[in-house]
Amino acid sequence: MKTVLCVSAAKLCAHGAALMLERLSNGTIHAIGVTPAQLLSTNQTVDHLLLDLSASRGSQVVRAMRAACPGVQAIALVDASLEEEVLAYARAGVTSYFTHDSEPSQIVAALLDGGPYVAQPVATILLRKVAHSDESELSGERLLTPRELHVLNLIEKGLSNKEIARALCVEIATVKNHVHQILSKTRARRRSQAIHMLRR
Image 1 (cartoon, rainbow, N blue to C red):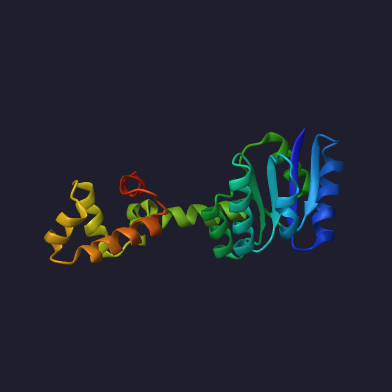
Image 2: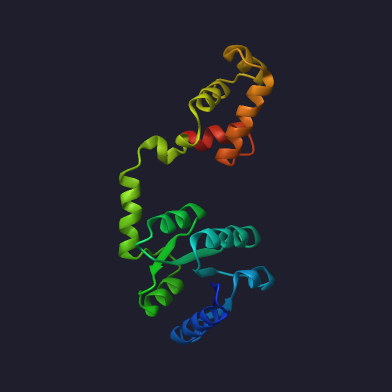
């Protein structure tokens, strides 16, 4: 049996979605309706999140649940006319998308199947984003300024902060600031990890 948390800002919507999933799955899905505030107090192993929230709030929920339950898979109900909402959810790691007019039976089938599912209007948005992104954008290099990219190249060559400062004719404190910005923007913990993330 799969456990699904149905997360909505409105308790009525969350509980209604949970009841619907259990009924349509003939008891093969155990669904719980919660608000974001109740989310981390459920103390259950969760297989899926079904999110009916704005992407800004939903992204926070996904990250919080992934920290507490790393294997959880997230499904978002989205308005396909709001492209930025879809992309924000994609950046948060959501792998399945339905629109608000999707058939409930499709959602149940996707939950039972366990694989990713993307409704057609959402697939169009995601494919268009990939098609109009060049390699550097996809790799994350556009996150960095030209100076930060230069510093990263020197790091990749094995230079220390002192050697980088000498090469760029700047203070070591300035180099340390650039390195801090690189790690922050790439969400890396180490210099080598930042290089790997941006070059893969």
